[in-house]
Amino acid sequence: MNFALTRTFLDEPGGGFMYSTGNTHLLSAVLTEASGKSTWELAREWLGKPLGIDIPGWTRDPQGIYFGGNEMALSPRALFKFAELYRNGGVVSGQRILSEDWIRASWTPQGSDRRGNGYGYGWFIAEAYGHPVYFGWGFGGQMLYVVPDLALTVIITSDSTTRSVDDGYICMLHDLVANGFMPAAMGKDIAPYSPVSVCGMIAPLVQP
Image 1 (cartoon, rainbow, N blue to C red):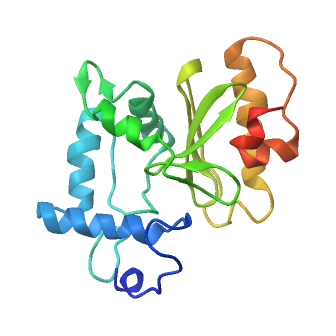
Image 2: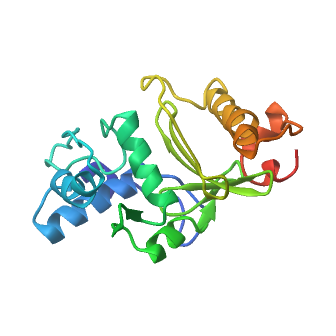
């Protein structure tokens, strides 16, 4: 936490988009301070219990704050239930867990990264074949893809020790979803996106 707080600003608030795991870690600290409970306790209470998933403890910083943006040891099944919670509008078994307003805000671009992907509250925002695609992107290629129009949710886990952007691996994952899972969900043959186009995932994906 101290490391995040002592970084030099690279732009003014409201300026250019800069992805920062440190920001979400500060949110973890704020939640802990405001609630009097650890982020782990809150995650188990707010998500683990209603979704019926196990949320094991994960790495903490030197101040004892659970990491707010990485290293959550969730299983693929747990990730799937989390993604499905969003796809189903925040409702599980008739019980509302998340508000529709929060999901809408999470899936509304607040900025865009250097590849042209929109970014909301923790979700990247893309489009393929005219369908909105929302995805969470964890280190190494731990991925959640949600395509509400097609009732499609895809979870991919990968080697967590290697950066997914260094060798084009993230492009291969986007390709698998755009040229594999989505056409299958649509039930028809579609001209595939080129490897170059699919790597961008938003504006480049609008046109094959």
